[in-house]
Amino acid sequence: MSGETRKGFHSVVPYLTVRKPGELIDFVKHSFGAVEHFRTTGSAGGMHAEVEIGDAVVMIGGAEHIEPKPAAIHLYVPDVDDAHQRALEAGAKPLFPLADQPCGERSGGVEDPHGNRWYIATTAVPLDQIAKTYTPSRSTSTSSARRSLSSFCEMHSRLKR
Image 1 (cartoon, rainbow, N blue to C red):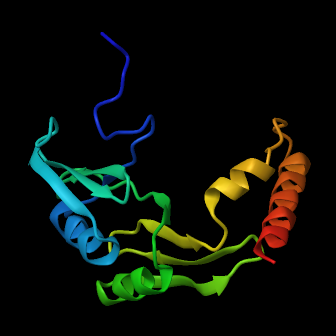
Image 2 (cartoon, helix red, strand yellow):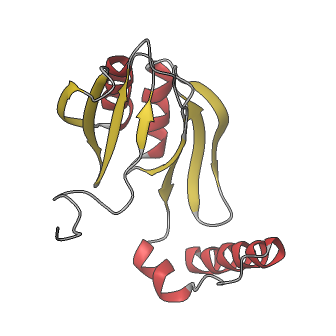
């Protein structure tokens, strides 16, 4: 075995499990411009499908007899206002309104009809600029994580000016 990921896949691939996977596929197509690559019968007798959203693959599966496992996804899109509106049109309920964040993102949250939470955002500062100026703390303490986030937000705000 080579240990490599499949072509087009990243090291982490979300797998969303719902009772009606076909409906979730329709939702992500309408809301986020997902492209369905295939669907088949999975090992547990339900549906297994793979869709591409932006540059990421998301697996979607399930069936009426399979327990759903709602998840949360942070998703970058080219136009968060448009994606947010399309998600609401497709049956999502708003979690928090779209807003310009101090860290340079415009973001909002929705919950799809299957209970998955989608935190959608468009960054106002090019990611390559963020990567050049931000080094996250390696500490795992909560206070250190807060300081890192605060530093990230301050740096992001400076880049935006």
